[in-house]
Length: 526
Image (cartoon, rainbow, N blue to C red; front, side):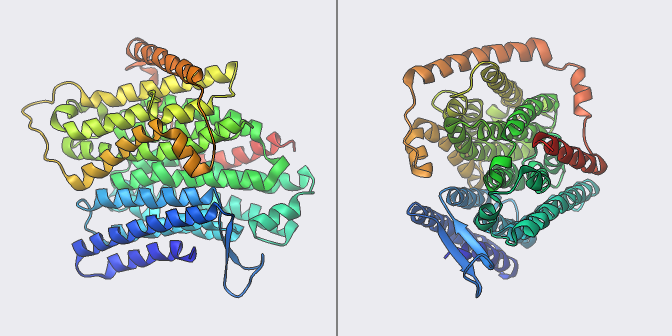
């Protein structure tokens, strides 16, 4: 059955491209996508009984192509099927181009393949297919800026995949196999110096896919291009970047004792802090959200690297939560930009008066991402920070205060009075319903978090009432402090003009890849 998770999206893509009745084709595609989501839940339930392994072709051992579904990958499969269904609904009335729909579902098939791939080479193949689909979607409008940004995205990913291929080749030379589990078994007894170079090469690739510092600039570039559709942005930040987080988990597990957890803990925190500063410096509404994604992924990587069971749980739950509220925010930002005709946040006012239902859904997502009590991120951040103490706890609190300041800035678009005469905007249900669904889920995944964590990850967790109340108090203080600092300390400061101008081009990114490789080698003790 698992092979169809890769094949079905490709079949849908071809069907959408060739079927002459466009509207009917899109409806049938969403029905098929709903079926794929149902199949994802079925696979998830089956994987709870044990790992499901499928061998493709005539080989039935580590020499063949292997698809593997386990407790982790099956959750990512559900998340992928759901986010693409939401984006397909949103894009129903916005995009009529066959090419857009073709590329969207090719992208989904590639990501599903990455989450199911059981061997190192097919991860390479499928990430490259996803890269090509994203690059063409960025260049979709075919204007000069979109073509340039799409080409830069493609070239950066072509450059970093060479690091992965060199690391893969080195591992194959050492182990003689490409299967991930077999490779982990063979290299278990190897010395650190033998594995340091392939580890550093592969983790350079993973760090770029996660948009960690200093390999981050491809993400805001991809979002800020004029041709970037809101649906593409929602998948890119809500889901695509999570493929990097998934690979981070897999490769840290693969390399075992060689994995530099302390280094990635520090790097995750630095990335989160830098993402906050960069987001506060932006005027483009989509770049604000893009840098916020970098900050949130930095938090996730830090939590996964703490060596704490609670931090691990909180980070994985935050992966799900971030996909929900960030997809909602990018989709709602797309509707706001379309209505106001600008992405300059200083020129957008009064959206709550013109688009009241959209604003309500957006506020649910905003309350989710800042960690409002009873909303989803309040739970994931509670567990992420559970075992943090001393300076580490302070850093987490300051980063969340920075997130609050980002969305105080973002929320300014809803207040004030629109310029000139205005009337409420006619609601497009194809767009509004999925955004509202995502916003409501931000609340539901907070209120019923213990159930969802047990269902998705088989964790029997109980939150301490006193501990959660303490975190709620910290949140309240952070809101007051964040509003004060934003209003009187940093808003419209000239220093942000300098921060806004920091942008690595292609040569800068390639140099950053080499620097990152050297730093990882030092971190693992070589």
